[in-house]
Image 1 (cartoon, rainbow over the protein chains, first blue to last red):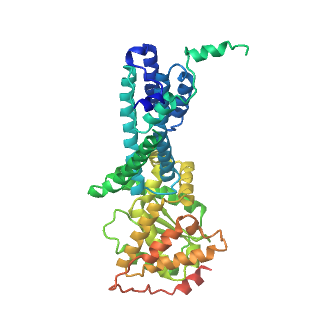
Image 2 (image 1 turned 45 degrees about the vertical axis):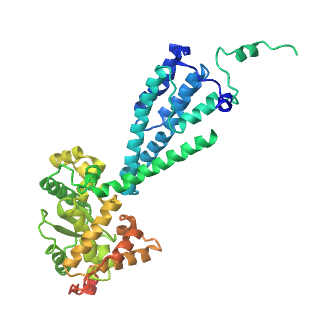
Length: 172
Length: 272
């Protein structure tokens, strides 16, 4: 356990996280819902918005970085699935190149469930982030944690000491 | 740590695949045809048979304005022989069928709304037997009975547009609809449904359903060197699957075909 802990930066506790950081972390999840609504029926704007939000906010703190990265990564599968459904649907109803079969309807069911799961878990994560808590999605949670909190990642955040030292360098 | 991440990814992928599989097989446990609510193949369009017949009359008149109808008593009697064999076996129908033979080299037949079917001279020139013509007509009758034409028009042009045409009778709009019907295509599922209905109708009429496969084969053979007149093939896509299903159509052992007793060569000679 101690070996594991030494590989990662310590997790910020709720009382150490400013309200502003908590709100920015929450915003990473909530903003995606608005972007998804705007992006319909072409689910691409949500992805662009997520990338922009991530790059704008990631340097603010590890807490915000983690949540915005988790939000970005976790919406990739649903976005790709929605693209697939859009393409398949157009082939069926607009271009008449294929027809609806059990595979298609199974895919529709899967996409609907995937979107509902994404929506529900994002809401939970947004609430937890607002409370200054970590919340880990399956796979994306661990991946984001590893990418953000690993000591091997040399990523500097606003207000950190190493960032300040970089401003004035010694002569030798 | 890394291995736990990848293990999570594997769980996620398996979860999605299982979810897909569940939804693929789940509908089989529901007796109701819940998919029809989302399908254009269902009879969901609010156009009455009377409206459809009126629309059909407009379109038929429009097409016959530009094309020359063949009115030959001998050919008409032969065509009636073929048509009546099929019509006597379709059972209860809401349509009053009208077949028109048009002097055009296209190997084609076009279904219009309201039970109107246009047969082009090229089809009669091309068919080797009256049974092959019956196969095409049975297919077109299926498009009428299944209301494919109305579904197609409503899907492509919209119900409001069609109702406007029916009430106003605007010649330009009718011409547009005629063009859509002659150049457009039905969906694969509609074509398959029409093939199946047509072959079953032929069975009932004691006409060998394999005539459709024979006709398909000849079309495909001729199409090897592209002929612009082979419209029926070009306007009826997805042929390989349809040829296969027409070849695989099961004819009961008890089936006895009753040839259509007409002098087909004389018909073709008459049309020259």
